[in-house]
Each structure stands twice: as structure tokens, then as C-alpha cells.
Length: 413
Ligand SMILES: Cc1ncc(COP(=O)(O)O)c(C=O)c1O
Image (cartoon, rainbow, N blue to C red):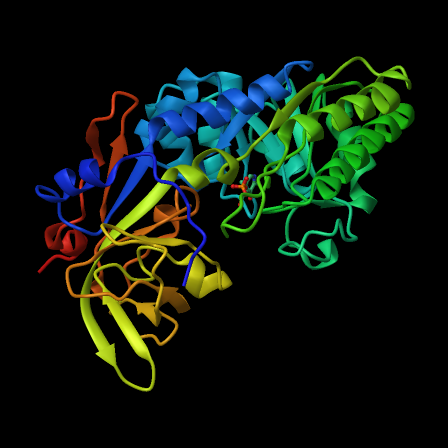
């Protein structure tokens, strides 16, 4: 039976060579691919004063963050560790956005010490911050308008814990203005893994209209409007890639017709994608440990849901290439499973693959964002190493694998 394919940036020979000296499982990122995605985004939105703030949570490896910096990105951080990763990767001042929720005060303190842009998740934080610290010149508010922007993952925003509700938005900006804040940002994250361009365009239109409304009521201009992250990627080979240039053209029209027509000073356009940039440029390389024939056929691999949670958490599809086998000959149906003591520890369910044997190498596609970073240590499973396939076609370790000593380091025996 023929099967749809996904390409790999390295040849089978190159990966086979690496596997002679490197233990599976491991993550592998494609440097050139990451750089190209950023270049595309910047090129498409070059009509605006545009900046991408890479969402650190997607791929919080300082070596990857440095690549995004070299390509002109800032970073979007949501926690202390992400702020420290940004700092250690060389990001400074307003290159760092801090979009957190239920925020511990120490994290605000750290963000303020880095001169990061604060993006507030609730208006109650304004007074809290004012009591303790001097409010910065530039502050942004994360807006949650309620309603539904057609995104399957986010759904009804009234159920979302994130962002400032409609009733508080104007008051929030008014209070910031009263407290001496001079420069303002408007932010929302209303879609996730969105492949429908119309839903993306709808979000931009909505935020532009909101900026006009706030401008008319409070006479404030926006230094930036942050459209959030959430551009989708085609996880399934039959899905199609977003046409970023089409989306950009539509957003440009709205920028002109809504913001400029209403006399707003032209704001910068910010975005904070993770998945769009690193998602398709990360691979999880694993080996088959066992083939088990029970009521179903199981391919037991040396990775598990603690390495890649998305399939267990979201029933997410990640395409599999079997190294050194012809993907046109998919003849066997497998559940591809790890060794966790959880029956949802399945990285693929009912997947048609070439016949597998012990030692076969499986490459999971599109795991570059929210892959390694969502990992955990259940059953005492250790985190894998991360490698970079460099633009010069070399393999470079960018994070070693965790050891048992790391795992037990927090105990005093
Ligand atoms: C506030 C915020 N911004 C950006 C992102 C990045 O999303 P994506 O990787 O889907 O672009 C996320 C993802 O969780 C987020 O919560």
C-alpha cells in the first residue's frame, strides 16, 4: 500500500552515521529550517514595523534561542526559568516579552530587572505591581474578549483562564495611564495550531478594532499590537501549509483600513509564534525495542510519552518515517508505545507502517515545538539529549541526556 510521505532535511546515510555514535532516543533540530521559517515570517510582514518574539516554551533550549536572536527575534517568556533562559541567551530589555498568568511576584521582579515588556493577564496585577515597584514606561495587556474565533483548540474563550475580560479592558488601560504609564501594548492569544487563514485574519481585525475603540475612549496610542502565536503547521501529510504571504496581505489591508483610517499612529506588529518556527524543524529519533502481538500489534520503542506528550495529551498526530525502509510499503497496523505504566502511553495508535523489527529506527516528525519542553519524569524516565543538524550539515549536541545522578540530585540520601 502506498503512503503519503514527509521529507527529512538530512539523508538516511547522514542519520545512520550519527546513530553509530549516539544513543536513542534523542531530539534533532534542523538549523536551516528554523532560520528559513523566521526569514519567511519577517519577509511576509516586512510592510510593517514587525517583530517576532519566539515563544520560549515551545523549544526552551538556549542554543535554539540564540539562533532566533541571530535572525532578529525577541523572545516571549512565561516563567522564571524562561526569563533566565532568555537572559543567558543574550536577550536584553524590550527584546523580552513577559506573558505570564497567575504570576509569582518574584517573576515580575525578575522581568522588571531585565527591563522586559510586561504583558498583564489581569487588571488586579496593576495595583499589586504599583504598590511594590515603579511601573515601567511601557506596559501591555493581554485581552480575552470571550466568544469563539473558530479555533478548535481554544474554543469558547469564556472558558479560558487567560487574559483580561472585556469588562476590564478599558479600565485597565485607564488605570495604567493614571499611574503614569506612557506607552501601551495590546495583546491576545486567541488561536492555537490554526490552519484556517480566515480565523487568523479575524483575530487581527478584532484586535485592530479593539485598539481603535480604546484609542477613542482614552486617547492613547498603541506602540504595538501583539497578535499572539498560534499559526498552525500541517502535522498530517495531507494537510496544507499556511500561505503566510496571503495572510499578511489581508492583515495589511486591515491595518490600513481600520487603524490608519481611524487616525491611529501606526503601531508595530508583534507576534509570538513557537510552533510555526520550530515545530516542523524538530524530530524525535527512537528505536524499536520489542514487537508484541497481543489483541493488537504493539511496537515498543525506547521513547515514551514522557519524551513526547502531545499524542497522549491531545491525541495529536505525529508522522513517522521508518529509517531505511520503503514508506510505500506500509503493510502493518501498529500502536507505537513507550514503557510508561499508563495505557495512554501511545505515540501513535492504529498506524499503518512498514513491517517493523527490533532495532528499527523511527523518526517522529514535527516535534520541534512543545515536544521536548512538555517532557516529564514519570516512572523515573530520563530526558533525552537534543542535537542540532547545523546549517553546515554537522550534528551538534546542544543538550546532553539526563542521567540517573541528575534524577536523584534533589535527594539527600
Ligand atoms: C501566550 C502564548 N504565546 C505564544 C504561544 C505559542 O504558541 P504556538 O507555539 O502555537 O505559536 C503560546 C503557546 O502556548 C502561548 O501560550
